[in-house]
Length: 67
Image (cartoon, rainbow, N blue to C red; front, side, top):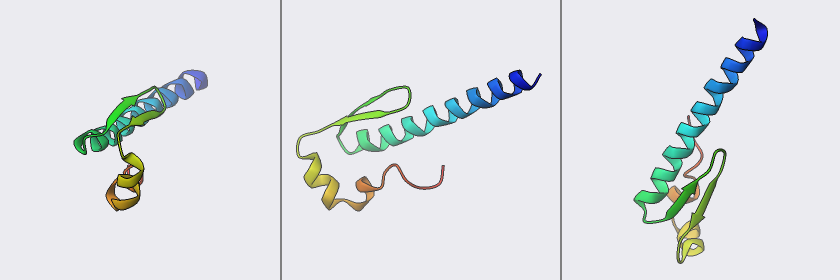
């Protein structure tokens, strides 16, 4: 029974992580940045991204905050 409970908890945590990654990806996409969401990571590409990243505090901290 404990194994099933642990497996269920892990599945719920993975789903929550996936939702949060999609929220972060959506935030980037709304700024015109190309994002590929993997199972547990984001790959970000954009022309001039470093300049934008340094100049826009909202973009710099897009992945932080309350979940």
